[in-house]
Length: 344
Ligand code: 1CP
Image (cartoon, rainbow, N blue to C red; front, top):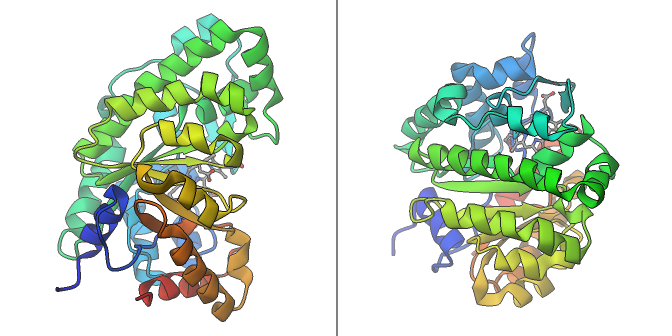
């Protein structure tokens, strides 16, 4: 049998069809750890880089050429479509919201206009990437922040360890948070479907902060949102990858979301989780991003362990348990992808 293309291997792994070995990519594979990224960003704000189609295409492609990942993810941020809703925000380096959401009037001001009209450059970047990648048959991923994670920043105003303002809203003013999540869900469905239409072959939903909730609160507040999104996406055209950070205690509810792939962080025992998930979904993960500071031989050994552990699930995509960090050594990233590509 001839070797599959990178697109075929990736999409088969996501859908749980037989593959020769797991494909590999890394969350936040484009970013400050790469000198070439820092050069492309010199003198340009993060927002400008996201809006500049040529620059964003170049940055998106950098990891493919420089560190050997086998999928390309759109260079953008989960807050770009939120700009399209009329929210005044900036990056420093994380999102900072000028006027955090406090009332129903604030929620009702959030515009759920067609993202193809409000942030057209996102779809232009995807179309350009898809045509650049056509000859090599490399898969293109789109992504969005999940409503709860977006709400966490919109209510808090900025990043936080525990997002106390959001949790207080959840317990004190549940109707208000429901209204906010409903609006963000509408936007997310439209945004991801427009990305699929523009050429994204798989989409990842990042619910970075959903793991802050208890298992019972997760079932009440997060699972229905994920299920709605999963049901309304054009998943015949693009499988859905669901990422939750710190979600070991909600794995069963993650399975019920209905995504093709569950992306797990490093605190989850990958073998045990893969067995528990079994034929119900594929798994993605889950090396600790800090482990890329180790010797290449150790990184290669972890990759082989992850590969064996992932066999129990329906499919496996090799990745980290969270994004690359600005301090991540480029050599460690290369060791990770090389070890993945040399798996038998
Ligand atoms: O200074 C800079 O160069 C900007 C740093 C940066 C980058 C490179 C930000 C600001 N966003 C990004 C790109 C980005 N963000 C991608 C690109 C594709 C990739 O290579 O993977 C993606 C998928 C994201 C997603 C994102 N942004 C998430 C979810 C995933 C995760 O890492 O948990 C979150 C929570 C954000 C918010 C955000 N944007 C930027 C920062 C520094 C942050 C985190 C803020 C915080 O710590 O609370």
